[in-house]
Length: 195
Length: 296
Image (cartoon, rainbow over all chains, first blue to last red; front, side, top):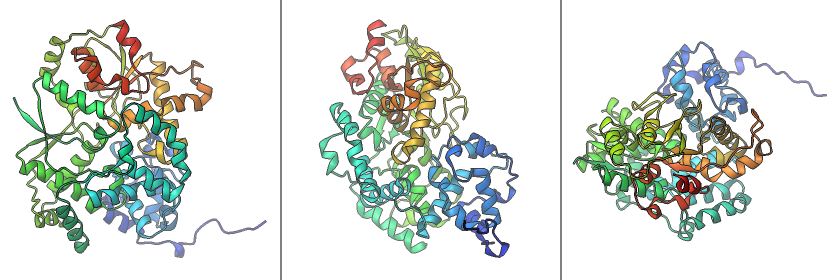
């Protein structure tokens, strides 16, 4: 039986983490969280999370950076904004989740084989490239990066959709594009320079 | 007749074609003009905010600037994801006129002056005027239709001002104006799972199950939706969800969940207004409202 310490020493915390999250999310109200738990009770997926939204807010304030950024919670948030509307301290919790997702991706510590971050990245890439999303393109990229067997599993659904004219064979290879892609690409470049 | 700028979004061009077709047909009958804005790009939905916030704001900023350049002061989009994203970006860009996102837009000839309001067809079609016009134009009174209106989350909160964020009524009012019975139930705006049905299936399916279960319990025989993703989750996954959970039995009452037709709300309006049946796209649905059509 291996015994290890389960409580962090204060020196192991990232004291500035809370400030960085507040800056990134444009939400300085995190510091006003009163730990009432309204967010967790209105969240439709909190019962599947490793840390509930209430707990996560406390962890951000206290500087539990690694735990927060590696949590499943951020990838389970479905952006329904119920917590954001209900929060008595007016914390934009959904936007805080987005900030944590971005920090996890930038730090390279998001779960690489999990479909949720793969889907977000695939969709962002396709839109930055073509200006138009492709539902099929996103599903294919996501599956190839995480679990290619997923495509087989989805085949019956695909057939049912094709039969009803809601999907076409050309969706597999054709990608919709906007006309003025140069403008979009210049926009991306300009923003990168600013950052 | 006022002409609104129209922003379709990706879903109505792929898995929800019947939604767009019936929306355009219904608006034509009711004298609402929709003109697609030229060269629009996708909104990035919730996904983009989790990857790159500045880009997420900027791609929506491009659409708002295009609408403004093409002289529209109101931009209508049928997708709740597009609606939230465009409204969120609109609010941000108006509140931060001098930040780097607005400046980056300026540099590529996409200056945005903040003059556009983003709207959803549900809002236009539930005005007092539209309801009266609709009620007067009903050709197929919807006898026997008990419709649960499902609004989903992003259409009613937090950037929306069209109705209550938890207990909205505007779609119910449309159903009543058409002669259907509006079914009240508590989960009208609870999350359908969004993309979780494709990423974390166990969680996504459970959310769909809870919605279907509540809707069943309250006696509806059809569901109206106002978002392509909500529609897809309820419609396309319904049979899998029913067979996976509780062996197909509702936990609460032990009743078997009835597979229900999940219908875009504009398809229902089109039906009541007497549009030709084959243009409505009922056949595209996984569960068709054939029985209701035959009975009413």
